[in-house]
Length: 213
Image 1 (cartoon, rainbow, N blue to C red):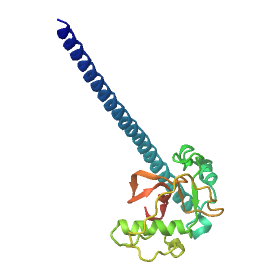
Image 2 (cartoon, rainbow, N blue to C red):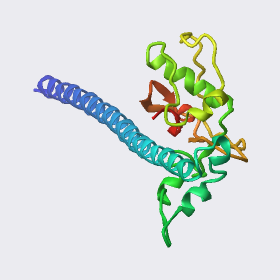
Image 3 (cartoon, one colour):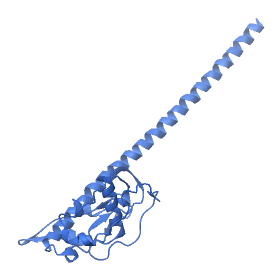
Image 4 (cartoon, rainbow, N blue to C red):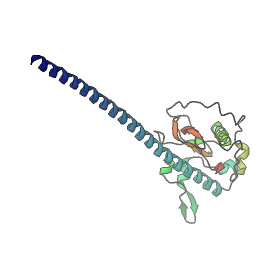
């Protein structure tokens, strides 16, 4: 009888051990699922911000072109000098036509909310031209809507060299943007992106300009 009770106790301890192991396994799996779900939510949030950044950036590009046309298509003298120039709008009769929404004047990817203004001769623009050329299979883009500015755009050599991609350093670009006429805007976020824009997977590589639209 005593030996039977001993066997029952041993069996009970063994079953308890299995239950504990099973419980720990379930908890580990739940923790893994929670981490995966959290990462998925984070990525989805970033994806939505990137979509909004592209939407707003292209609105800025359209506003630059509208301003350029209003000013007479006379090269850099017809370009805006600040985001405020675009927000102010352009005269239309006795009123002003709004060419840029206040929301679009903000970069949703950077903590400062400020777009970096891109000078027509900036090297950043040359790098963007290189990316567009690679994306199109080797055909350099041409500024059909703004041909007067074609000679100002930095030319990039070895445009099909796709092996020299730099790693995104993260953080934000706090350098000054153009202090004069600008032809486009870029995000100040230096992070890798979830989406790609013309094959570019870094936020600060996305330049929104009417040159090649």
